[in-house]
Image (spheres, rainbow, N blue to C red):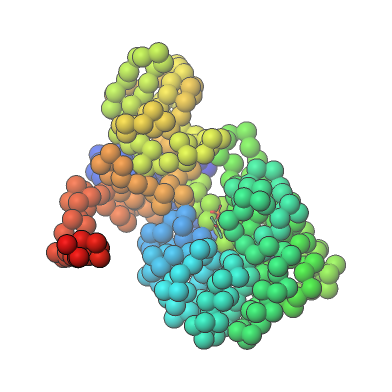
Amino acid sequence: MPISDGFARRLEPVLPAVAEHFGTPFHIYDLQGLHETATGFKAAFAGMDVREYFAVKGQPNPAMLRRVREYGFGFDCSSPAELWAATEAGASGEDICFTSNNTSYDELAEALRLGAIITADDETVVDKLIAMGARPRSLALRVHPGTAGAVGESYLGDAESAKFGVRMDRLAVVAAKAATLQPESFGLHMMLGSGFLNPEPFLLSLDLLLAQPLDVDFLNLGGGIGIPYRPHETAFDLPALARAIRERLDAAGRSPRILFECGRYILTPHGVLVTRVLNRMSKWRELVGVDSGMNALIRPAMYPHAYHHITVHGGDDRPTETVDVVGSLCENNDKFAIQRTLPRTQEGDLLLVHDTGAHALSMSFTYNGRLRPQELVLHPDGTVERIRRAETIADYFATLDCEADTLVAASPAIAAR
Ligand SMILES: *Cc1c(COP(=O)(O)O)cnc(C)c1O
């Protein structure tokens, strides 16, 4: 989706100066946009017992998490590093929801130490908690609905290949085990997929969870509210979801607290990757080579249908052409766009790759020695602040600086000689 008119108005006039001052490439995040989405989220659920736990995996920079926290949101974490980022942003206890999978004792111990809500993704997590003598204050079981939860294209895939959640036909047994932990508050969790643009999957989750014959204090409907990446798509109708949830709870005469773990919806539209044209190349196709690549935004290369809108700074009135926009990695799928119609570009032009506020830098990597770009924020008053510097070659090789350590582990056969 093209960035909002407001973001464009705030960014475009200052962009050349920002690129000159900080250098390219960079992700830049619009705090005014965050403000509008976050207050919109709260307004949609006003008067309801609903809390959003921002999914740290989408944007783990504590400088951004602190901003997200200003709206009363908690954090959804699934690793020790994400727990660290959440605490850096000032969160503790039940401001944190630990929704991990394939979890270790150490990770559970850390989440328990922080007093986080523990979402057990599997029976083995409950077993581990029992073995640890743990007393989580707040505990949820993540439920996989099997074929009952099939909704369009979902990253959870079909039930048979599912990696997440407790099978519904096993839920009663696991819930009985969980009850022996005597949590003060108990809930269920279900997340059917990601990137949904209509409320149906969330209402299906709610129906399936309400149908379980268990006493719950809260229901976690997960993340997965989508954003319109493509220009013709329509935005998710959050007030409609809120109304439908309220109706269903009223009809059921139930009042569990509702939790969400949205990342994408909150931040994605409020970031862009700014990258400069390095080369214009004519091969079988016309190629626009830029100074960033799939290592800074992997979604177009990773997901078959992913689309990120691209605009050319100052290019609105130029004639158009159809090009591939490519980075510098030695991978042919290192492309931000394939056969995209864009204003005609030349070396030095600034390109904006839209919708990188979440699930962009957090998914970055350093293959080919291509280093991660810096992160900037655009404040409502027009100032631009660096919140993460670009990686350096020294960072790339920093872990070579390790304590000398050699283990002489001879096998018995060698020892016998
Ligand atoms: C990925 C994920 C989220 C966040 O998904 P978004 O698409 O960013 O809303 C939330 N909860 C869990 C368990 C996840 O795996």
